Length: 247
Ligand code: BJW
Ligand code: ZN
Image (cartoon, rainbow, N blue to C red):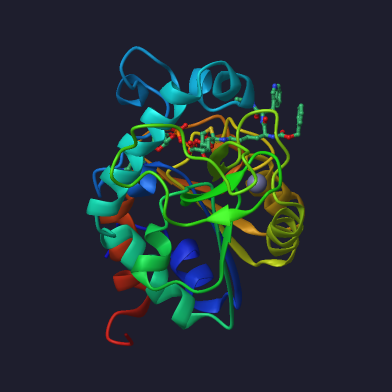
């Protein structure tokens, strides 16, 4: 097939250490809305207006309403061929790190195991005061705000703007970017830091960087190749071209 360059196919075949960064775009074909652009709006709000601690303290009911809506949606959707292709890739390489900005857990459902969730997981909640976690809040809607046994307000266990990412996970993600031969950045606008620095870091440390997105992004000029199209179509085709008959 001549859809992909020989160089890319060779890299896919010869690499031993592969790292992938995913963003909302990989789950778009499962029916999960992305953050930016037209469909990123919920009611009249932009995600930036809701995904921060100040917004939560000012109006926890509104922020919980948004998260409850999204949790229900995410609970009902399934991994798409893009997720599945990435789980096949994990089985193929001796070292494979899947770094995701997504909170939807679809990579777990697709069967990946070495996953670094940079921005948390929407199905978990934790207490604002004591940090106690819970996995059972907000699925059925709520008549009053969820509270911890200590009386503190529960919040979604995700990373909002202005908050630190889980440091151990972030360190592992940068280590994977620095050490890989081949790095994919899939379905992310690459505007949110520090995740957006991962492809740049991979490039600086010598990896071959491949971007997959329905449109060019701010990091396209750092990539060795940008493949334009839906990840649910491109990723399976790529695997097929590289390992036809092998898997
Ligand atoms: C497809 C497709 C298909 C569609 N196939 N592709 C100025 C400069 C630099 C940094 C900053 C700054 N001012 C502030 C900051 C820091 C800030 C930041 O980066 N802001 C920028 C926006 C300017 N970052 C932070 O605050 C981070 N923390 C931090 O830096 O701590 C240190 C610090 C502390 C105090 C002060 C300053 C620094 C935390 C960031 C947390 C982000 N959280 C969210 C919400 C998570 C919870 C939730 O889900 O509710 O994470 S925001 C949202 O954006 C979410 C996403 O993970 C993240 C990234 O979005 P993503 O995944 O890229 O989605 P989209 O929608 O943007 O793009 C989708 C892409 O898919 C598009 O390109 C489409 O084309 C494509 N696509 N269909 C392939 N079928
Ligand atoms: Zn508590």
